[in-house]
Amino acid sequence: MKVGIIQTDIIWCGIPANIARAEALISSSEPADLYILPEVWSTGFVIEAQSVAQTEEECEALRWMVTTAAARNCALSGSLVISEGGKYYNRHYFVTPEGIAARYDKKHLFRLGGETKRFTAGSERVVVEWRGVKFLLQTCYDLRFPVFVRNRVTTEGYDYDAIIYIASFPTPRIAAWRTLSAARAIENESFVIAVNRTGDDIYCNYNGGSVVWDSFGEAVAECGDKECVVVAELDTDELKARRKRFPTLRDADLFNIE
Image 1 (cartoon, rainbow, N blue to C red):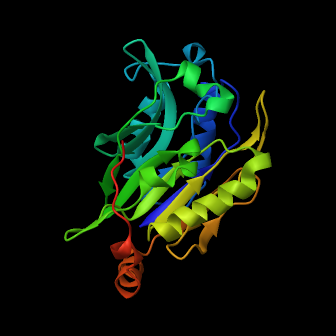
Image 2: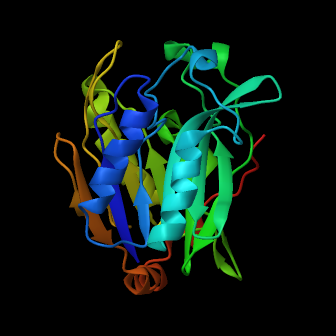
């Protein structure tokens, strides 16, 4: 499985420009099975959701994701500000050539940034399978809450093979970004694909640091602090072999999430 990290400098509220930038980065990349964009990649982290939110039917960025996935025979992942039933959601989409395969509404809203005042939180874990790999969808602040993402092992196998974290993680907290994303990979015996943005908005600066971790917390591929696209190979055969050799989750504590 080839995964493309799209680390982009998001233009504040510039939906057409951000679509064009994402298109250019993907066009410059080697082919991949899946391309992953940062959190709210078409607008930036706009707390005043009503100023940028669109319904699924009118959302031009979502239409572009659907069209691009079909045209390039790949999947795309990334979140958008969506309006539905009078509420606003930071909605993480996973789009395949056949259309929208999964939707995940960000569960842990960023209280310090005012996200809890404008957005509605989701409650469900979402796992989507694409070309034989199972992905758990997560968004930014979710990274700090390991209980919600704990991988589960049954007689049928593991819940997922990789966690996708898309984010707008600012420069002052980038050390936490790397430490926590590596920890999520180790403790869940999975890949972690952590995709952040670069550039500036009206609140702060972002310096990227997008990275793909393997299940031992070792970097498979990573970006620096500039806008770029990097393609990483997810070796799921090796992942399965490691899980067989060192099955730590079979000794994990049992618990319920409320």
